Length: 296
Image 1 (cartoon, rainbow, N blue to C red):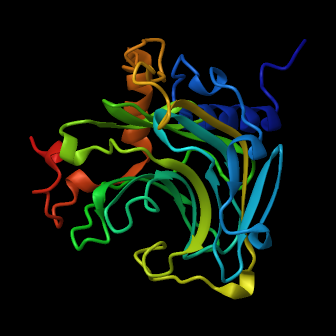
Image 2: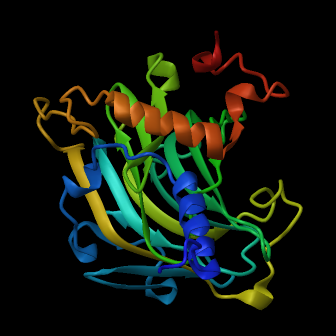
């Protein structure tokens, strides 16, 4: 007769499986990264700071920080689109180091540029990475810098494997995705608080010791250099700055309007309920007079 008791190892395995399942977001039901083709590195991106700080081939790019920044830039600027990359972060001590995938027009509009960021804030031994999403609108370097930061912990270890991070930018909304799960939506409330000018796609790694890790408490320690960020599975699909006016913005949902489905919205709400660690709209130490999207 079979024993009515489960082996201890099986019980532990089941508990671990259930715990991990509870930590993962619910399925979004739609997977935009699978809708857009992967772009070879040299087809759509180029070295930004030179080969001394970057290795690249058609499968991806590895960029590193050794007292100098490293990075890449898209060949064309876009005025809307879906932009993604699979990224693997460095483990260990990375305090003060920013690994980023973002949109910007800083070279075209220095001191008055727009920017949409996915940034990984470096960390110390034994502490998890923080993913920061941010939006700047005509406001960096002009004395009225207004960031729109939302920060998240992740439901996985981003140093263990590649995960896909993406920005969907349309004329009406910006949506941030992690492994196709929407984690944040930034709607257009007005022309003055939403980026509308063409931007390039960038990837970079750089020293941000003054603020990146626990508000600058921990700095970059170059005894642990080089600091490496690995990028692959590049996506860049949408309307370029040179596309005709009839070019239709791409969507991150089954709807041509780009509006999230109910299932996607619920997945996003779940992530924000469990993994959101900072929301600029709820930071009452900040002046929200220039962020009407926070007004109630």
